Image (cartoon, rainbow, N blue to C red; front, side, top):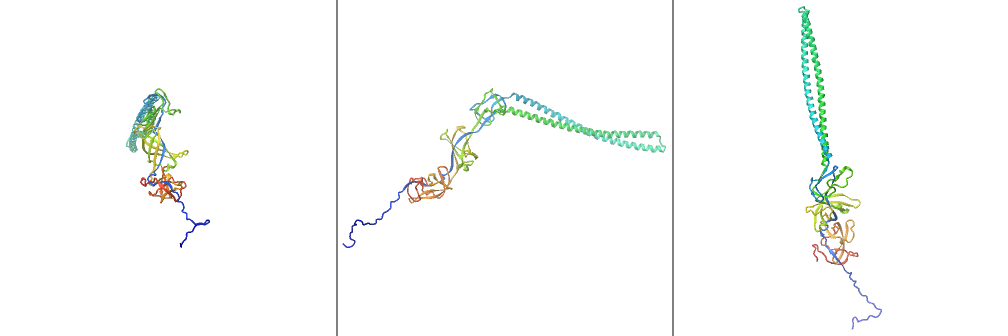
Length: 436
């Protein structure tokens, strides 16, 4: 047969064969889709419940406990009398100060009367000056009249028209008028001196009145001080609350707080209408903690109950030893179930996020300078995608850029996974959360 005759291969002859490479086995992976708003930054820390106010009441004065109106567990109101201490010595001193105050008031009245009397004398002295000056003017006029008469008589006598006896009479009258005028002028000086003396008496009386009024102020202050000391003998509640501690019984001797030996207080009053929940925030969360942040409190002693509150106070200072910052949350105690000393967990929402988020386990490497890498399944291959990472809540991390809601991201990528690794995914979640 012509053409291509069959030909057998003999030993030693070789034919080149084309070999197809084995396909790389696919790696099975789990994937998730990024979700919006699930990376809210929060912190969950242990919290302890403390009374909003816990007041240790000590005695302000020393004495014997005369009355004790409350005991441990009693509910009290603000201003309610809890105990009375017997202080007879202070009461006697108060009575003495009251008497001294009354005497000081009486002296003020006496000094005021002296001032009025001295002012009346001053007016009389002023009137006396006016009268003396008027008299002096009158006597001066009379003296001038007598001198004129004497002059005429002397002229007539020189003309031998009258007897010398008439001249002598007019001379005597003139001399009398001179003495009267001198006396009147002297009376004016005396009246002015009397006025000065009376004015000095007025000034002295007014000074005495001021001193008496000052004595009233001193006596009043001393009495008020004593009354304050006596008031310290009555122990009152500073707030609405409950008695959680009582140390003495009626008849026991009570030492005042200033004696240098305070020891135990008479009572401890805790205000229980609301409580403080104290939380220590770690350093990483401090910049995101603000007054008003929402908080949820779960108390171990009250399982199933969640108390809603807000951050009320922030210390704005970290403990240098622990690098923790004190934060307080106020909780109302309307049902009366809370008690000081309880503890539990507090979750504080620090920052609301609108960015996409992924579980921490989706990150293929460490976060450095806000950047990391994830693997996205595309056309059956794992593709390494760089992403920008934001804040986290300890479970999920915010993805600021690099992904969309339609990207299927590998969770817990194997250590040997590289860009282009064939994968088959299972248990994928769609953007709405349904499996496909």
